Amino acid sequence: MTTPAIKGQAGLTGNSAIAYGMKQINPDVCAAYPITPSTGIVEEFSGYVADGAVDTEFITVESEHSAMSACIGASAAGARVMTATSSQGLAYMWEMLYIASGMRLPIVLTDVNRALSAPINIHCDHSDSMGARDAGWIQLYSETVQEAYDNLLQAVRIAEHKDVMLPVMVCLDGFITSHAIENITLINDADVKEFIGEYQAAHPLLDTDNPVTYGAMTLPDTYMEFKHQQSKAIARSKDVVSEIGKEFGKKFGREYGLMEKYKLDDADAAIVILNSAAGTTKVAVDELRKAGKKVGILKPRLFRPLPYREIADALRNVKSVAVLDRVDSMNGFGGPLFNETRSALYELEKRPKVISRIFGLGGRDYKVKDAVQVFDELLKIADTGKVESLTKYIMNKES
Amino acid sequence: MAYIEIRWHGRAQQGIVTAAKMLGESCLRAGKYVQAFPEFGPERMGAPVRAYNRVSDEPIRLHCQVAEPKYILIADPTLIATVNVAEGAPDDAVFIVNTPKSLGEMQKELGLKSKSAKVYTLDASKISLENIGRNMPNTPLLGALAKATKVITLDALIDNFKENYSKKFSAKVIEGNIAAMRRGFQEVKGE
Image 1 (cartoon, rainbow over the protein chains, first blue to last red):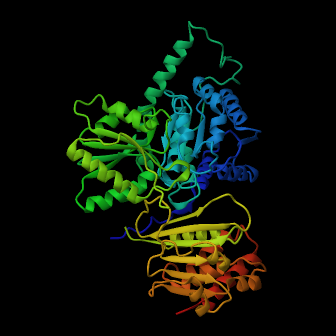
Image 2: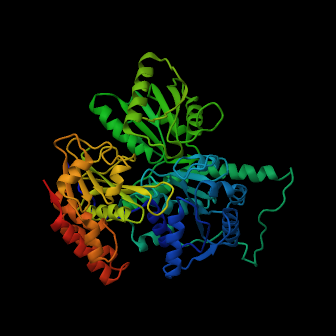
Image 3: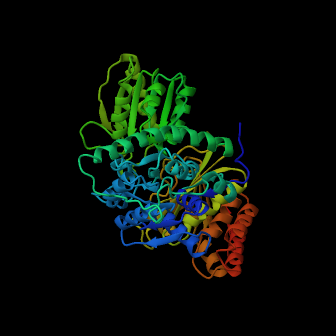
C-alpha cells in the first residue's frame, strides 16, 4: 500500500523550516550569534530581515552571552523575542538562561542539538539542552523537520500563556534534522498570525505609566517566594502544552500531546527515546512486530516540565524498559532521561525493569539494528526478570 | 518499508549537496516522501564529501546514515582510488561515474565483484565546462540518473530547477544547467 505525499508539501531542512517559522511569527526582536549547526537559522532569518520580509529588530552581538542578554532586555521591555543556538553557544548563555526564566520572560529559543567540547565535535547529541535542563526553561523535543516547525509555532503560545510566562526551548537534532531536507506541510502566513495572536506583555518595562522592576535584589525573606511561583508556573505549563497541542491539531490537523506512544499499548518491552532517533526506532518496532514481538516506543515531546504521571501511566503495563539517552550525565548512573523516567515509575505498584543505554554521542550513528539489539535484550529481561547490565554504552563501531 | 537509497560522492564545491537537494525536491514534487542530507566533516575546498537521498512512497522515519545505497553517483573519479565508493553497495548497485574514460576502463577501475552491478559513465566535467563555463558535474549527473534509472524523470528535474532556482540564478545559469542536464541524459553510456 502506498500513501502519496501530501499535495502542496515543501522540502525543507530543519534549519530552513525554523527560519521560515520565525519569519511567519515575525518577532519584535531577534538577537543571535550563529554557531554550527544552527547557523542556517540565523543566516536565513537575517536574510528575511534584510529583504524587509519581517519587521524584526535584528541585533548582531559578539557572543551568545550577549545574545541572551539582549533577548532578556528586549523581552522585559515588552517585545516578542526569539533566538537560536547550539552546543557551546547554549553553554555560553548559561547564567543568562536562569535570568530569563527567573524573570518569567517568554523568550523562544531553538536549540539545534550538538555535542559539547571537549573533545570538540560539531555533530549531534543532547549534552547542550540536557545541560540546561534545570535552567527553568520549558523544553520541547522534535523528531522531524515537521515537528520542529510545529513545535516552534506552539512554543510562542506556550511561553506567552498567562498561566506560564516562561521561556521555551525547541530542540531538534543537529545535522540529522537541521541539515536534512524532508517533506513538510507549511501553514499559511495568515493562519500562523491568527494562531499565535498579538503579544501583549503583562508588565513591560517600557510602560512608564506603570513602572515595574525586573531582576531586583531579593533577600532570604522573598527569594523563595519567587522560586515557589516559578516552580508552580512550570508545573502548570504541562496542561497548557496539552491544550495548545490539541488546539493546533484541530486547526491544522496535526495534534500534539506531551508524548507520542508508538505501538505501546500491548507492548512487553519499550524504548524511551527523544528526537530523530525515535524515527529509526519505529522502523525497528515495525520489523519486530512483523515477527510477532510485542515492542513499542515512548517518545517524550515535553521533557521540561517532566510529565511524570503520564510517563508512569504510559509504561504501566510493560515488563521492561530501556531509556536511551543521547548524552551521559557523567554521574556513573546513566543519562538524565533514564534517571527521571525511572524515578517517575517508582510510584507504580508493579514496576517494569528499567535499563539505561547511552547512544549516538558526538553524532555516532544509531541504526535500526541497534534498536533491535536493545529490544532483544529487553524481551529477555521481560522473560527472566533479570538485568545483566543496568547502564551501558551502545558503541556501534564496526571497524 | 520500501525506499530507495542514493549516495553521492564528490569533492567540496562540486555541487553534490545541491544535486541531492535538487533530486529530493524533484521527487517530492512527483508525490514522493524524500530525504536529502549531506555528511559533513571539517569543511575545506576539495575535501571528499558525501550526500544522500532516500525516496519512498511512504513517510520516511529512518534518521540514520544511508548504509546500502542502490544508486551511487561519483562526481570526481579521483575519489575511486582514495575512498571506498562501493561501501555497503548491494549486488545490483548502479554506479554513475563522471569520467572521460570508456565504460570498459571504468568497470575495470571500479573492480566490482558482483556481476549484477551496473556501471554508467559520462564526461560530466566536459559537459559542464561547455554549458556552464566551469567544472560543476552535478547537473549532468542528475540528467544521467534520469536516463539510467527510474528514480526521476528528466522533465521533473528540469521543471523543479526552473521553478525553484530561477530567482537565485541568472537566466544564463538556468539555461546552461538545463542544457547540461539534457546532455547528461543523452550522453550517458551503460551496458
